[in-house]
Length: 368
Ligand SMILES: Nc1ncnc2c1ncn2[C@@H]1O[C@H](COP(=O)(O)OP(=O)(O)OP(=O)(O)O)[C@@H](O)[C@H]1O
Image (cartoon, rainbow, N blue to C red):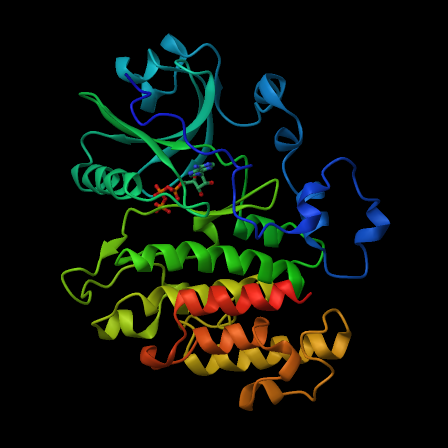
C-alpha cells in the first residue's frame, strides 16, 4: 500500500524564515505597481504563479489541463504509469516536468486524497532506477522544512515511482525568470537564500552533499517556502571526500573537476544561485566557461554596487562602488555581497559553511 511513510508535513509547518509578504495572498497587485522596479517577493508570489496554483483544491486540479492529464486514473493513466501498482493507487495524472530519465506527474493519492508528485521511471533504465531508490532511501532519513519529503517508493515489473510531497509552486529559475525585471531584489533573494542555506546546513550536518544545487532544483511554494529537490546524485562524505565529477556545469564548483571535493562544493553552487536571483544569470552568462572565482567575486561587487547605486536596496549602505571586494560594509554584513564573497572563493577551505551563511543571512534579515 502506498501510505507506508505516513502523512508528511504541510507547507504551512515551515520554518520561521518565511518572508512576511508571503502571507499576503488575498489580492492581486496592480500591474502598474510592478513597473519600473525590481519585483518584490509579494509580486512574485501573487503574479507569477500559474493560475492553477492560485486556485484551490479539486477545482484547481481539474482546470490545470494545459499539460497532459488523464482523468480517472486506471486505464487512462499516462503510458509511463500503466502499471497496476500505480493505477490502483493514484488518479488524475498531470504531467508537470521531465528529467533526463524520469517524468514527473502530479496525481491524487487515493488512500488519503492527497495530491502528490510521482517521479516515474522505466524499470529498464537500471542506472536511473537505482539512483531513484537511493534518493528515496536518503530522503526518508531527512526531515527539514527546506528539504522535500519522500512519501513512498513503488515498484512494478515495468516501472518504478518515487512519490514525493507536492510543492504547488515553481522552480527558483521560473520564479526569477517570470519577474518583470528578470531578477529579484536583494531582500527577496536573501529570504530565499537563507532557506537554501538552512537546507544545506542540515544536509552537511548529516555528512551529505547535494552535488546538483541549482535554481531548477529549488522549488518555491506559493507561500514562499523553498525546498531542495532532486537528490539523485547526492552523496555521503562519511567515507571521505568525493571523487566523482557530477552536477550541472554552470553551477559546479572548480574543485569538483580537480577533485577531491566535499560539502563546500554545494556552498559554491549556493553562491551562484544567489547571483542568479540577483542578476537573472550566472557570472559566466556570455561565455561557455564555468563561472570562476574571479567572475563570481566580481559579480559580488556588481551586486553590491548596483544596489547601492540604484537605491533598490540599502545593502551597500551608500558605500562607494567596489568596496565589497575589499572589506565588509558595516551595515551590509550578511547581505548579498558578503554572502556571495563567502560562497565563491576559489579555495574551498576559505569558504563559509552553510551553517555560517544561514546564521549570517538570518541575522541580516532580522535587522531589516
Ligand atoms: N515535489 C515536487 N513538487 C512539485 N514539482 C516537482 C516536485 N518534484 C519535481 N517536480 C517537478 O518535476 C521536475 C523534474 O523533477 P526532478 O528534477 O526531481 O527530476 P529528475 O528526473 O531528477 O531531473 P534531472 O534529470 O534534471 O535530474 C522539476 O523540475 C519540477 O518542476
